[in-house]
Length: 92
Image (cartoon, rainbow, N blue to C red; front, side):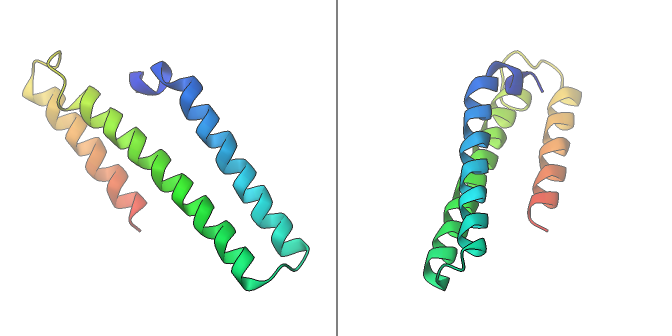
């Protein structure tokens, strides 16, 4: 995936923020915070993961399906199949 290399710094920054959110969730559970605070931490981490997934999907579509540099239907089909498989795994 070439686009993940091009966007490496931005994607890693997102992953690090997600790690921080998950660590905050862990601390909330360890310190027996209230349900509302734990739920807020879960929602924040889930939202961040969804945003990361959306960004990678968007770049995949732009780079492997919709790009004018892709000249063959076989390449577009491969890109589309990869996306469908990723979405199937994501939605399980």
